[in-house]
Amino acid sequence: MRMKPINICITVILAALLLMFDSCRKEEDPLRTGGCSDVNSPINGSGSVDYDDGSCLYGFITEYQITYHPEFDNAAGTGTDWDIGLIDTDADLILRIKQDTASNWFFDSESIGLGTPQFAHTDTAVFPAPIEYQLWNTSYSWNLFDHDLIGGNDLICAGQFNPIEKASDGFVTVVGYNSVGDSTELRIKYALRKAY
Image (cartoon, rainbow, N blue to C red):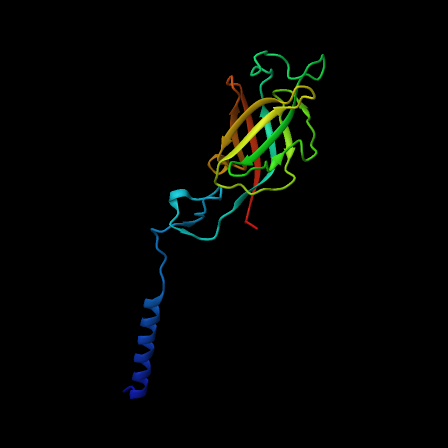
């Protein structure tokens, strides 16, 4: 049984089309890695990502914590309690944070009505974030004061940090110091989500 010339032509055309479309199919490159390449994301792949696949999540501040601070005002040279009195001698904390390029503090616990709560030096002071600022890959400054009604506020400590470099498991953890080397730990809690 012989094939008709028309059937042969159709078979040849179909085979050619199949070969042509199959050769146009893209194959995944096993040597290229997709991921987040945005330097402002706490989960960016740093040098391990070949292309940005749109999976970036960003850190938005939900809470500020002071996990410890010096028990006494050693920086004043006196080594005395933070406040004068027989009771309530713990520090009345004022926390301030800003980007180094900014002129204003984006977080100031005193100015937003959180007051100046007293905390023992080993108690964790928690300040809720009234605005969930996005963390950026830049330098930030922070300071912690003891609020005093007379004679001005006492600096407990100060520091600088880059939150993206210090971000891990939902927290940015940094340590600041005062002039005599006493340390204080600041923890910034953040939530990961897509940028607005």
